Image (cartoon, rainbow, N blue to C red; front, side, top):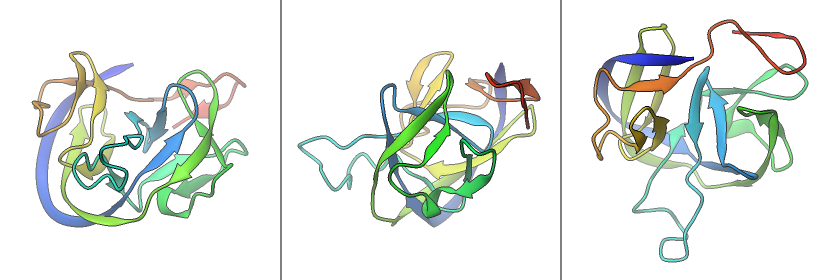
Length: 151
């Protein structure tokens, strides 16, 4: 389900972390579909791309429990669009300029200004043109592939 961005608020510097997951590199955090950055050879420490998520945001594990993103371990399986994806890398926590995005569905997420989301207009970050009115994928009482209600 696509949900419009209702508000984007700059909230200053916060501790962020980035993870990598297998295959498509997308996963659900706080009920919002997001993309991990994946390191590139020209910026292995990700100082320039900085596509990071607030370290306290939560993901849902295969066993149904929620876990803070900064408490994940390599090998954990987290919700993705088509199934569960395995965490393959966890990058160091860094302080980044962050924004809080609120969707019309009520879901919120805090990310760095350079974090890119899959949107109705392609992959966008706040710094690359993400604005109020753009649409992000969000879960609102969707039934997942094993028949559980996702909140």
